[in-house]
Length: 186
DNA sequence: GTTGCGATAGTCT
DNA sequence: GACTATCGCAACG
Image (tube, rainbow, N blue to C red):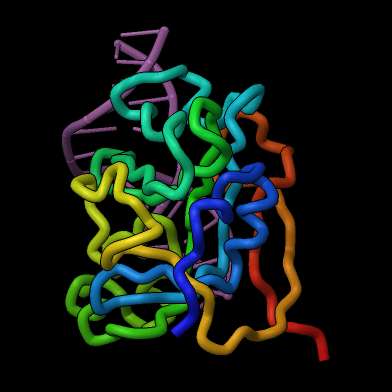
């Protein structure tokens, strides 16, 4: 298996980390998947970032040290997962939007009874938290150690990156901050 | 294959 | 009291 990403990987600008996270492997217990879609929420002037509301009970981890998990509840029923970036004291995080399942497929199928195909197991931000068993109790978890980590792939593949505006937001809708892994050209 | 819409509760104003 | 960084199902083609 590849090495766990060190904290220095996360202590950089959210846009750079969002792009570099594609192809890395998100691991939670027995389940894991390759990150194939991310969105950067750089904080600062970006009104679409949750950190635009300032430091609140929900957003405080975004302003903390990098390499931790920002997990939040939305739409009355869904949980989404972010990775905190940028140095402590500054805001920045990355929404993990989709994974390609790698290990623990049987467990994922049990947790995601609604998935009709294996592709549907973790093909959305709230789907992947269900598939990997990520919950609000994982808020603030340190992703550089333990059984909830992000690591380099065992065998890196070539791919290209598509960049588009972010999905499902109502402010700053035109910023190109969504990154999607695409198969390498041949 | 696509589009439209209801569910449901925490967070901030 | 309004607004969600969504999903799944139903209807249609």
